[in-house]
Image (cartoon, rainbow over the protein chains, first blue to last red):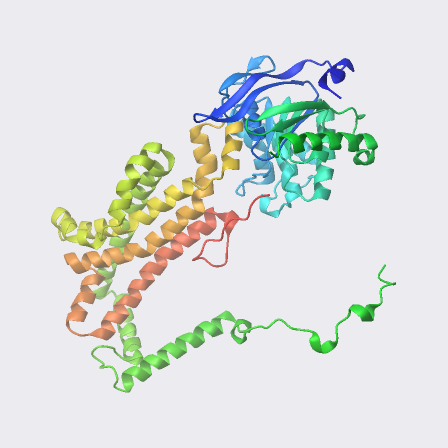
Length: 266
Length: 292
């Protein structure tokens, strides 16, 4: 299954992200990323998978405008990415909620930083409805120390969504959670993306997670970090956890595992 | 499933059941342990002094010392000659602390936030910190005279370093994730400082401040020893020269109240401002629980 078949199947929405020949070199000769070409279309969910040190987090940072590429170009919604942008929402492995802020204040932080305190106060009702969306209704005034790991990540989802970003960049967002919570959170993530027609780009270590969530899985290899293959996942939407038992699902997992065995773990 | 398992096969015979050992002292209320230790200490002290092993000129008996503590207390409360001396030392301590706080926070932010401060200023701060700071006392006296100013300077000089280090280390305490998050939401340098680095660093800042609050009293007294004046240090010096050891002890007790007050003030401020990290033990700072 290749990218071409996915496009032939009619997934021809307008491109959100366009990366062309993006590479990153640290120092003189450490090639973290080599000539990555990638197109993410509106409403699509992509995952990038690879072993530690294959440059997938570097790729995400470049896409987010947190670090500049050595060469190549990153376009988002038709304009080049030259720094942090309000139309990007980010989430990391750690929830990184600040213990001196209530859950509500944590969620409003991006608005407070970008537009000031008054705008943050005005956005409070929106933050409350987001909390309701992720099942944290009534936790507005709670401090993060009283939230469980899964609840903290749900609050982090709200913080990511408060600026109404068009695209979500997710760096192993649920990998610190236990597997049961993680499966549940992944399904929540799918629901949120579908409701908003948001595009998402996920970095993960989990093959199953990548397959069940994504339209396209990019398999990366290390030294130099590059995309070995992009595999279109032709499973119906919405995805359910039951699909993990389908032979088709197993075939995708096997294919990706084979690529990783050949490329990434050398 | 448990119905099918033969329970007798897995249960242990009663004599193999083990109980967690709990030490005798850990079962007592804390104040009893503390009081017991004090009584033990006073008894030992009384024994050593009244048996004649140690001359009363060198070490007074506890009874004598307690009597003198009462005398000094009455002198202070009646506003006799010791009270003005106490206020002299107290004002040296307070002003020394204010000066150390001002300079310490300024230098701490310079060192912790700017690369110039970290690369150019910090080595000098470390170098000066390694010097025997009391040796500077004669210089402060020569520059500022025998009055209160030279003591304030020495007290501030001794207590400024933990504040610098606490502030600078605190500003470095925010982890990579938090910095990346602030970067990703487009926070300016000032916003990152005010909304991330300063609150994250408050516990370490207060740890430095507590060390400073205690050492500032030592600084003021050392200044009085070496530069004269009208404070409690001078009273201690006079009493010691007259071999009035009970007086020395009781003056130290009242001085420790000054240190305790400073420490208590800082602890209260920490409790008030670092509300997300309140621990029962005020001396050690609890490490923050990760948010995720």
